[in-house]
Length: 114
Length: 117
Image (cartoon, rainbow over all chains, first blue to last red; front, side, top):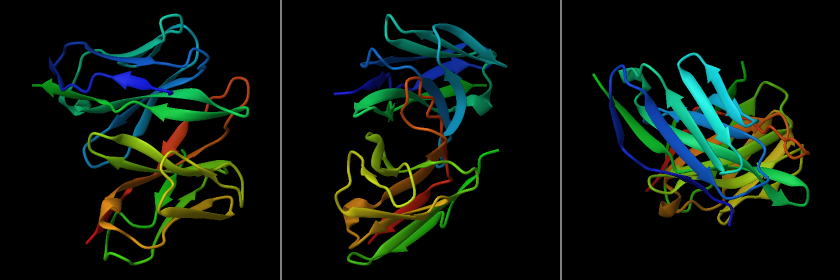
């Protein structure tokens, strides 16, 4: 069973703090990893992609990937109330016959307190 | 920017009705997907298509069918709507699927919240 696991939260952080969101996945051969942000009642929006071990930074967001530990995380620096949303981790997993399928975690709800 | 549009934001139908949900993308993506999203269950893949007239079952295809007559358009059909199909339906598209190093970034439409009474 291909799985992507996230802590459902809610994760509460004060405004200006660093929010740390974590994700583990079951498929050792996965090659690409994504973070989506979803506001209540809206559709998921892609905010970060990462393909290699290490860190990838984009503005206040940093994605971290450790393939050996099958672990990917998202750090949000200087958290703002507008970052309050559910964050979905998605992993491209091999689904057989040479094809891949994007598997989503159930999401972590982040609440940034002013 | 990738743009994925869905025909309705909100839809209310009666049990037994035939329901069509339409999705259009403007970025010439090969792959298109239909998901439903329910509280506590996350995103679940219903069907996907990697080419015109091609379709593949996802994790929960029962009670649904799809049609892809043109590259930019992917339709989800509920042949006889039931109350357990009340959900948020999300369409997505991506540039490629599969391959040795497959990126598979998916871009979502705004969603259709379907209520079946």
